Image (cartoon, rainbow, N blue to C red; front, top):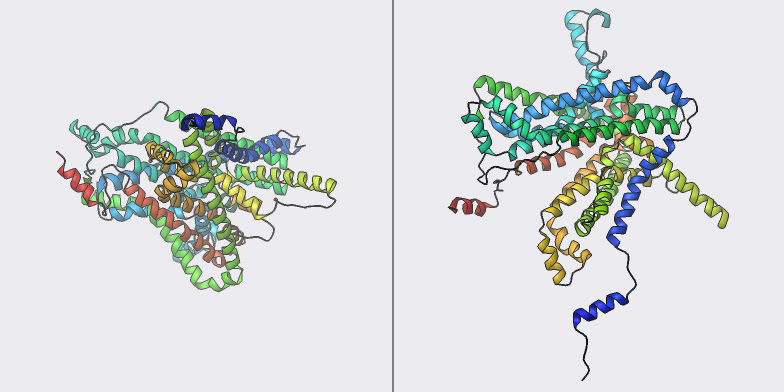
Length: 578
């Protein structure tokens, strides 16, 4: 009777006889990391090449002004968003007043409005020829701008105000989520020690929420550094505008790269300060008994002030711009339609959809590779690949242009020498370049959502799938993806909307005669033709409202102990527990 080897021994022998295979997950992670790193590497390499007299000219003329203006813009927007975002988050979380339920989600809506769109709207309203100053002149009989004082909208202060109105939701979002997660026991202990609501806020709630608020302010400052449309329209000299001018107007790629490296230093300092600000800080719930937050009932006067504090940001950040754009769109919609609106909209939808799909696939791949690998170098690579969001779009655009240009020239040279014809530009100046830039910049959104979704799935499910004969791909497809479908859809929507709004990279990477909604609006507004671009601007705003609603729902359900209405059995179980 012939005896066979035990199954485990036979499997071991078979594996040893096979040729060593490539770890697909580690190799794919390496490729994604290299793709993200290439633009930054090319920027640094280009910055090290001689720039002639351009750099010395920049140092002697505008560099100091660029640094000071950029710092002032960052500080102004950071302080403004800190006050508005944190204050409104505390009010709607801990206070009871008329309209609270509406403001919980309405305070997020200005996030749907790009900063350059709101800048165009308020310039149209507040400039000398606008309706506001026209009313003032008619009321008081002024004949020229020298007869009265009115704040200049196209200024550094105007840029700070515009960005603050649409970026404060970043701080509000994280601050409110942090306030919702805080234990009632800690707040009650503060009240028993004689602290009132505001003292409890400043001495207990605010310090506990400081890490989340620091992250929100850091995101705001990174968005401020990335902005191009607002500062260009207001003629405010920041690094983003300087990079664009040196690249195109002075025709100096190396000078632009050197400015880009200085801008990267700003980003690195921001990240370092944010990490330093919350070093060795860990916060935990002090009680497993979770209750609804009590809410402080305000007096009529304080309730009125709270209502105004929440209503003014929504009014200025969304309602007025939406009303102006909507009225213009009704009156001038035919002019917009005649200006290739549908083609422009299709271009935006196509680019944003492709970028969202690729970013989601790459983000899920990286997150699952990190889950499988658990090695130090895979962890480092995935973290590095997700840093694209911290790099301003103008910096990435320069690196992508140089990298793809080198790649096109290399392919063209090889084909000329070996086959005998020219391939021309394959990647540069195509929608591939724009899509590649979108994916590199917004990969962190999809990776973060996928990592959070996978983190909620116990490792025992992986083990159970493996015992049933499912490999990594099958486990991801049949187990993990159905569970994390909600996280993936939310991330895809966020990437899609951010791509719809992205301006600096699109301006620099788009093909010739190729317009998106963002570039269309920027071009018309720069030519003082906002009414003709209002329908396109309104389309961008409407596209951004959907993820805002999803974010609001997510925040409302983020507090431990909260149950959705369709899960009443969980509430019954908690009430029945001893």
